[in-house]
Image (cartoon, rainbow, N blue to C red; front, side, top):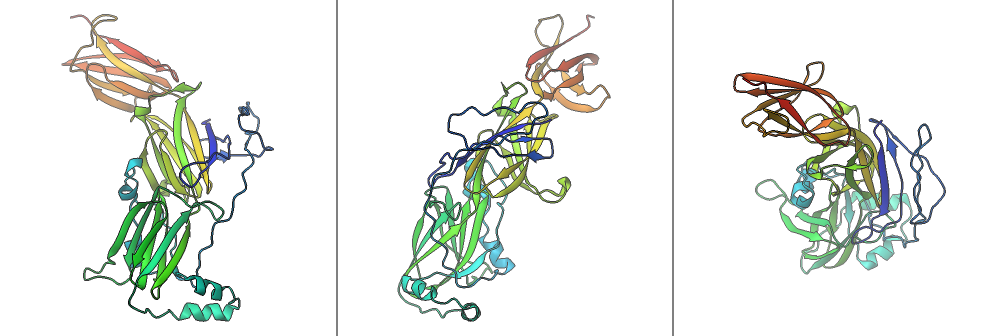
Length: 399
């Protein structure tokens, strides 16, 4: 069984505010959780015993003031071209996370940014007929002057404004000569204040692999504001060998997949993630594959990311590093230019390597190492024990 130990913490405005701790235990394809009463910080979490249900322990959350709500008066999904133009790849905005694919996208909404006077007037319009009439008739744009737009993003409806880690992109809704919407602003950080001409715009708010896109209408000169509720959390991944033995982090990599459909159809969201790297994701359940080296040492499990929480996951590998050496005598110098092949007892290929002493990470089990030196071939059966790194010497026959 593969076990995942996880701890969770509240993400604060400029980073991460600890408020939640939990332990998750998962099989290769499932995640089990159960609740227990609140605990104080510093309390040691009880580990799962054989056959006992896994506990979930947490601390009481601090009270927070609610975030301002978005001032939307109408909603409609933009065209496919508009949505595609406003979706930004993760590699451009979060290069420090080592990602190479586009983040998940959420359905954009059309809104008209509001002046304070317009906001007060809107509060009195409660009848459905009035809101439908507003949605059907777009406001006319009054050119001239400056429309100052303030943008803020929140992890949750009741969270605090994010002060860093955001990527803001603003596009003019009107397409240019190349058929694309021109981008007027591209900035990183927290809240953003930008001066624009009155008009219609597409605003992209990206936070790692979580993002939200809105159509914003600035009908005339004035001050406007808009909030983006991302419903996002963080995920930090790590791994150890069975028995809590540290692994070589340089050999650890993680792939994060969407938890939708069958395993074969799951979408790769974040590839090649390093150990202890924080990945920002939209709230939901994700499938994690941890690879130790590039041979057969892999484990997998499902993890739930909640908005506003940072979840730390430690995956357990039954694996170890071995170094292959072809020697003329026990403890002797390794012979150079050796071609190696590692097989299972059934003859399945596990790994090929070339060199005097290649180092491989292998899952625990029995193997056969075959060394080829020129026209001569030598072999040895060996076993790999979880967490036990060692040299495997193959003795070359004397001529």
